[in-house]
Amino acid sequence: MTEAVDQTCHSTHGYTAEKASYLRRLKLIEGQARGIARMVENDQYCIDILTQVAAVTSALKAVSLGLLEDHLEHCVADAARKGGAEADEKLEEAMQAIKRLVK
Amino acid sequence: MTEAVDQTCHSTHGYTAEKASYLRRLKLIEGQARGIARMVENDQYCIDILTQVAAVTSALKAVSLGLLEDHLEHCVADAARKGGAEADEKLEEAMQAIKRLVK
Amino acid sequence: MTEAVDQTCHSTHGYTAEKASYLRRLKLIEGQARGIARMVENDQYCIDILTQVAAVTSALKAVSLGLLEDHLEHCVADAARKGGAEADEKLEEAMQAIKRLVK
Amino acid sequence: MTEAVDQTCHSTHGYTAEKASYLRRLKLIEGQARGIARMVENDQYCIDILTQVAAVTSALKAVSLGLLEDHLEHCVADAARKGGAEADEKLEEAMQAIKRLVK
Image 1 (cartoon, rainbow over the protein chains, first blue to last red):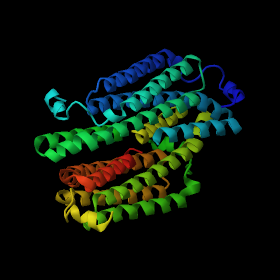
Image 2: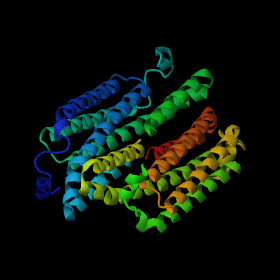
Image 3: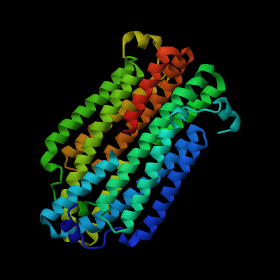
Image 4: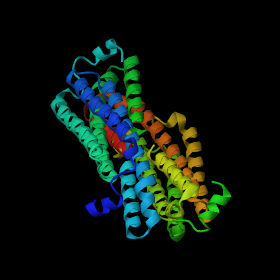
């Protein structure tokens, strides 16, 4: 993402208003990842570990969908309002992010 | 998972032989989660953050598939060899884990 | 989707330019679904049937991503240009469609 | 899937007992695919088409999980009971099918 293009999305992003919430959720996810390592360290049962990994994956998916929604409603909508090459780039970037999510 | 049933899967699990590798991968995932929080903290561009979240999600999915494969080839295959109620429980547990993965 | 709102997306949609291609792909998918039924009818091996179901699922996912991309670049971008309630509705609708895709 | 290996899973499969139900569900899926084509033919709204595609994808996923469960409980469990090369092949095949499902 070139610096110049980012600036046109000015210094705040769609997620800025929810920054504290995202940081809390990411802190939880980090702790859950550490917890899974402890379960492996302590030879816990495979299915119980898999259940925890599924929980972290769901938490990450929710963070992704939140960031994507904020981005569409903020950066992409702003760019679409201006139109032109920047709008095309923002829409293309968003679509690539959606494809990675759906993969 | 009742303790008794776990014991029949005796103290080692399918993943035991790969324990060090799983711990290394989980350590990386924990670090990546911390890195994503730093990106949010530093107001980095939404799409760049989403790209990192997709990478962690893929890493977690690979860990899940590895654990599941080890479990099928070890605990489930052992139980199936013995047959009876324990085999049914192990197969049911494995199927629930697969459904969480596919969800 | 109320008729009135749809009209503001005027009679053509993002996919209109690719209509023939979408119809061809959907015809193939329909045929593949019929083919899977025949495999079941003929008592074919489970794994071979699962492989075909995975192929149809991938084809459907590709159709979804194509329709979504066309929609974002056409209906959603148009609405964002106008701004206001219609833009919010289009973005919300698109996000719900993305969540169904990711689910 | 070599003919010989299939025979060891003898003429019936895990899904045989539910054959009529699978055929009904696949018939519905085929009809839904035809319905989506009609929606495109009639220039219906993108989001409404995407909603239908998501419904068919869910129906296919449910068929996949059903077939997989039947296969694990029947062909894979039988092979695991016998052990040896055939058990390894059946487990490997099942794991590949799970990976395609999760992809």
